Length: 116
Image 1: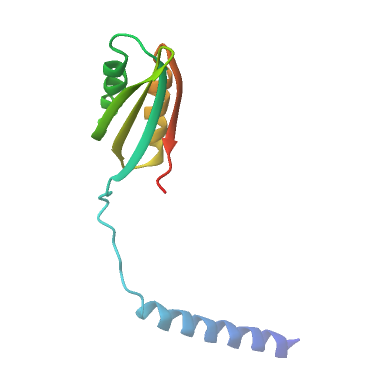
Image 2: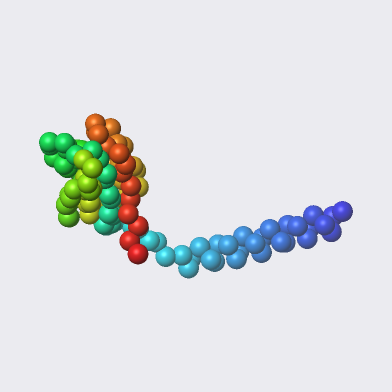
């Protein structure tokens, strides 16, 4: 029994020694906390009406999001398609933008366009 205790004690001391010596080799790394914005494309389909494009742009602007590109065209049968290239810093920001746009009257769909 004493032999097992001694063996465990020696193992503990050796483990501590190697762990402590490994700690000396650690390099402190610190991130600066600055996030690089990522460009994301979104497409909005809606029933066309006066000022709807302006409302979509305004809903994106509410989130302090930079719009890199914006455009809209008629899709026929009283509908329109708007495409935006925006800069986001995190997925929560994108979700917030999509929810704002979905809440606009006459919006049919809003989705992120995956770049190929």
